[in-house]
Amino acid sequence: MNKKPIVDQDRRRKRALAAFQLLIYGYLFTMFLIQLYMYSVRDW
Amino acid sequence: MSILGLQGTFDTSSAYDGHDQKSRQAQRQADKWMLPGAVMMTTAILGPIGFPLFLKGVALQRKAAAAGLSVRPLICTLLGYLVIMDSGLNSIGWSLDLIAHHSLINRTLVTAWGNMFDAGYFWHYNELWIGGTGAPGEKSWEIALVPTVFCMRLAAAIGFLQMKRWGHQWLIVTCWFGVIYWVGYVANMTVFADLRYNHVVFPVLGWWIYDIFYITPFLAIPYLHTVNREIFTD
Image (tube, rainbow over all chains, first blue to last red):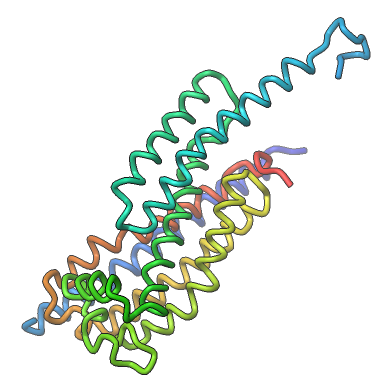
């Protein structure tokens, strides 16, 4: 079997997983910032 | 078994079988320490006892690997037990709140937790008809996740630790479940943040410092999608 497509597929898979990680941690960080903002505007 | 049918001349069966048997024994011995250790850690209270037991098992497995025995890769061991603990910790806390909300241990531990980090477990506690947490949406998460995702994750982790193909596949499925419930749960925490982080000892930051550990299952997804699947058997 030709190895090139597998390597390419692997590279694309790793890139997709990196993008997914950035997305999910970005989402969590955004939620954290929203909570921090809410915390700062109300005098808890 | 023999090579080229020359019985007795190149007999490899005893060496292979012996190695296989020793490897299985070593793995079993290590798991005998790691499993009770991990289960104790899922109870939270017995965690300080469980942790050294777990480490003893890890040490035994590393020793066996160094001796050349065919034991489970360390990353699989850590990942499998991490998922057992993740599902166990979530299940025990939420099951207590769901079905044992009036027990003394629950009222002591959970409301103390609520007072410290998350008022969802303090505000109007045990005042709903179903009892337990009064935080909006929280009860629904308990009902939705404990009998489904966390049970599936526990089963998947056991299969994964046995290096079964279904264990690997179901760990992938339940890790993606994990993404969905985390997105939903964190959104819920944020929408009701002014209720849940109000008048607690460590608002916002405290919850995040504690709960950031719950994202660890996401770290498994890249590994599960890139690992050589041939190491798992039917």
